[in-house]
Length: 107
Length: 121
Image (cartoon, rainbow over all chains, first blue to last red; front, side, top):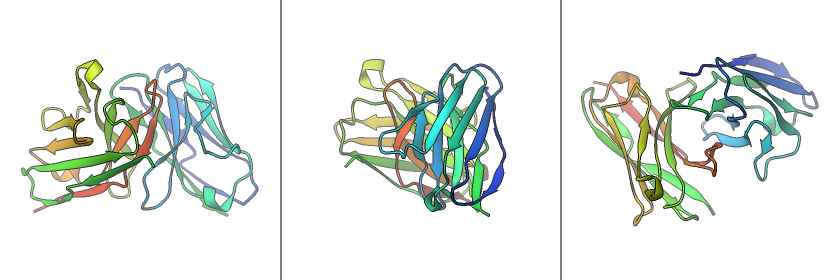
């Protein structure tokens, strides 16, 4: 199985900060990576697919880069509604797997 | 509006069975692959399984943790996805989400609101 390691698992940031979350895969997955945002009590929401393609309707302050084993999700200017938990997911091979999550909280 | 709505969750004893359903609307349900994902209380996301479309012979994939116990099916005429869960264990306690697989299997969008399954005596 492909393991996804997210870092950090928790980060504290202020409105307006630039935030970067990293996701490392235990083996190469090309660009088969998605990023999700989840708020408490809600279902996850797709932000980025194919490592760097912004899902329709998602603000442009979100961006994704990477391929192979190293990926990043960047929020260019953190907004109040961005405080949430973020997950990466690999769709390269079964079983599909998720990273452990990164909780972004208000500093 | 594209929407997925799960139902069927509840409290069940270990060893018991439960059937979850996911009602789809706002898109041509027969086209996409569909997946189930679960989330134990306070924990991260765990992929459960997939069912492909008619063109792909409705083939399925499962996580090792549920293989042989869970069965995914779909009724394209009723726009419904199902998850039959047998031999339930306490570790199956979770919120279960259905999700549509986007073209190219690049991600899941949208997700349903989730339904809670509690396995306890």
